[in-house]
Length: 270
Length: 270
Image 1 (tube, each protein chain N blue to C red):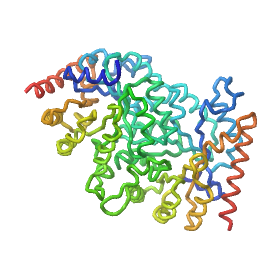
Image 2 (cartoon, rainbow over the protein chains, first blue to last red; image 1 turned 120 degrees about the vertical axis):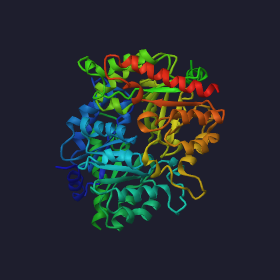
Image 3 (tube, chains in turn red, purple; image 1 turned 90 degrees about the vertical axis):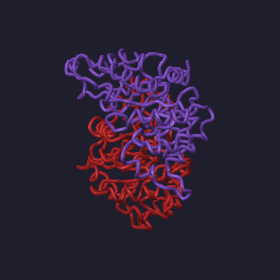
Image 4 (cartoon, rainbow over the protein chains, first blue to last red; image 1 turned 30 degrees about the horizontal axis):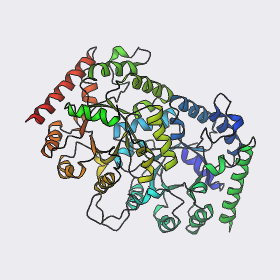
């Protein structure tokens, strides 16, 4: 099953919500903290309870790098138990000169065996192409992000009347020879989302920013439905994995996913 | 000794060349490959032979991440033997939403204990500020990079007549409250360097792109001298650490550094 097939099969089953495994030792339930590898134990429980309902899983590498080699061990163990039929996104936000980006790509795809990655566009094509060369993987390029700093550079206006992030979308379309590119578009930008949707009909779209960051799942799904575009995946991290801080945290996460999937299905069915 | 003091004391001694420990298992001398940790053994020899002459050391994390937890072990061992009186730059090119950037900053500064970092500006201020809050560290923001893809976004012209990278420099100046910011400026852009130098007199400048990438050490040093700016550090990786692939590789690296330092001193003295 290619990465593309994994994602498309979930999207066809109306599973558009991605579980973000941003696992923070300070936020996991107390009773897990005495385990040998608390982060792995937490992830295992969340994965088991949500894998059926998830559109994808997203793992932000920062949460693991923080602990150095130990963190990378927890990450490898977590990756080893993730099911084979669901897209696993390495939210790494990498981008470097060509020969170095190749090493990052090898880290993400050959070593950790992620299905997809997130990338910083700033350094341009040759900083991204070593990733793109993994043609059976999916590559999400940051376009308009969910944070307030998006105004500093992403929303600068170019002399041609485009914003910088619109130029990123335009280049991503141009570079999408293998039909395996995507963009990251913050769910906290509903107006821009509505305006842009028709410009990325051939790109997968990963939307962070729901829940803790203030974006609305309803708004996002409604926008995409309006344009008959179903290539989107909405990431939720904290609102799912920390839905409850007692021994029933995994059950609560599954309930939250079920709530979200009901919202999505209700909108898409009408 | 703060990170700033480490850097300034080397610059005052006219040590402007930074050794890039981009150590690739495929490129190190054959006789080291049977060692238990060949990358660490290689680094140790290079560090011992070049530490006196180096303006700084720069370690690109990609080269270590590629091997996952094992690579991070080599990295930690390498960091543990680097001398205390020389700036160690973590060339990580990170940048994420605030709470996640904080984790990357903790990884770079608290876990690995680097003195400095390189950062992707794309996501704006709040993606960088968790790094800036480490006020005794140095933060190099990518401005104009050394690769061909710099034309894709960095060199797009804004409606105000600035290029995107000029806006990054302008914001870096604005954010430089703690006098601990720097920029990355590719040595492959000598014309732009000459034009811009007066705009970053209060920022440290890290210049990659010498040697394998085609930039000229002579040109860079001459440009900075012309403007009486000595806050620059020129990175050389491959041309130093792979100067020789026999058992005398470390000696050859030291000789190369000595050559470079002579070039720098000759220009700065006249």
